[in-house]
Length: 121
Image (cartoon, rainbow, N blue to C red; front, side, top):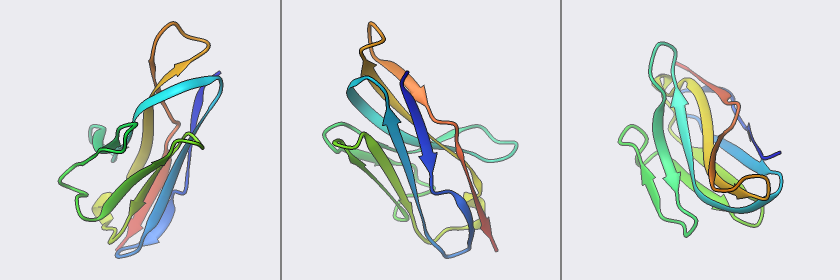
């Protein structure tokens, strides 16, 4: 059973930093693009950063210059370093990944359970 597990969320003061991790486990053959989304209360889930298997990255304007996405392919893990955090960064942060496993006929998009990030002013 493939699953994604996020960690690293918590309460941080404005201006602080957090590093989120998302580890994929299971009978994984390959992982394509991995991404981070977030969803604030009353708002739609938004894509904030993505990284391809070769390391190409994209960022939403809302986090550009403050966020860095990276991945460790050997560990099937994606990271999100967030700096200069603002109260408006408060949200549940989710990762997803396109994973080809021994249990499915094709690549499937998996989601993590989410990790809460709260930024106090």
